[in-house]
Length: 431
Length: 173
Image 1 (cartoon, helix red, strand yellow):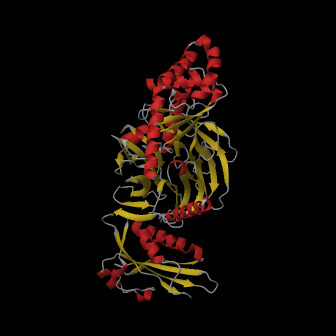
Image 2 (tube, rainbow over the protein chains, first blue to last red; image 1 turned 180 degrees about the horizontal axis):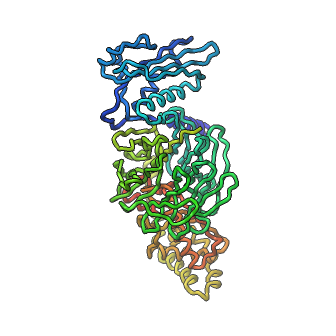
Image 3 (cartoon, helix red, strand yellow; image 1 turned 120 degrees about the vertical axis):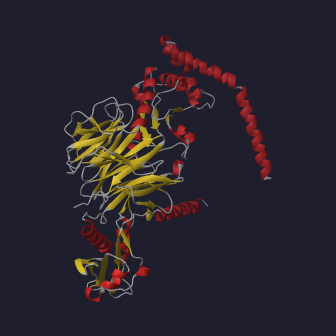
């Protein structure tokens, strides 16, 4: 009987593991003025009936998810060209698309693949770009995301961020049987990979600038510790386990240092740690809470949360130390800063009248703009091209993720079939 | 049959509970002995010696103030209420009387706002409790502080009531 229970319990665990496998993305608010584009299903030549991945569907989903494009639904495709000679531009003008994507997937004799694509300007009737990518089966999705990046950049002038990843924390169960998982998935929610599981809280994932490592806080020893872990191999190193808080790790833009919060000297202060040697330098020194450091992209300043003025607000201090300048003045609660890749905007959690929303401060104009509706939004993280902010929110009693365009006009929701998901962090472009 | 059995258990429980309350006076009386031990400065050693056997008994006694091991806080505050201070005096008395006993103070917050700021806030709450224990004579080696911020709610849910229960420091012996 006991054994049977155990088996059932294991099966439940497995089932919950599968249920939390993939994040589902749903566009909840569209963008008017999105560019109309047609992505035709790619041609296929290979041994099996269909290509192992539907490249056109991946590109369509990427472009729609960016909020900048509106793809023609499959049922409205008037033709299915797979090479330039088959394209009749006047037909595509009739269905009112500005641009057209076609392509082919070819299975090679060695079992690898070649993916070809072409992008056309329908109005002018010209080819804008086209490429051919040799690839393995395992990398077909990555090639599709790369094609999305090329299309996005050619048509919007901004770098695409489709070939990136998101780290996040999920929880399942409750009370004593709660389990915490740290995962890394592709930015479209596919290919989720568990990098750590614990029965104690996991929090504050932070990507290294080369997108190869993640720093995080684990309470697995019933106290906070900071680890850095290689995503590909799973090998990890304990970086900080001082008495008290070991929290809020943030990688420097050059990858050699980590800003973090320690309370080993009495109360939470920000320190800079040399990752290779572990040498520490204390950056703040007040009787107040100083935490949640974020590096400016030039590596010269740290923006952090402090309640030295009586309520949590954001401040900026030179990395070498010095006087901290207060940055936020609107609202009683501004915390958890994330800085845009160009260094000109700060996303934060703003508390106002019991609601916690994501707001963005423009550092040039000093204008603050609230982007979300709350009431319990947190953990904002910019996409590496600066176009979107992903954050954690609630839907009823569930924790889900949302993403919003920086101008607030486009939204989507990322949720699990079961369980809670929180603390999303968008990876850098990597190297 | 089952129904009858459960009824019997309910009756039994009521009997046990009323039994407890009838001996409540006695228990309160014992608890005040501990007060005397901690409040009389010069008598600490004798008070400690006198209450050490009592102390280990009362930690498991549901009617002892030591059975209450949670201190609650206001929003974004680490200030300990008068009620909380009274409770901590009892715990300090027990710890002073039992220098071999160790307590872990777990600081917690409600779910609102930023997670790492909440870790810092939970830490500040636990440190407030630690300070009061130490002011009442508890040795620093007897106390460990850990903050879980909003990561370990006592009450699930997103109401004022749940948040009130989650803004807390738990004393774990």
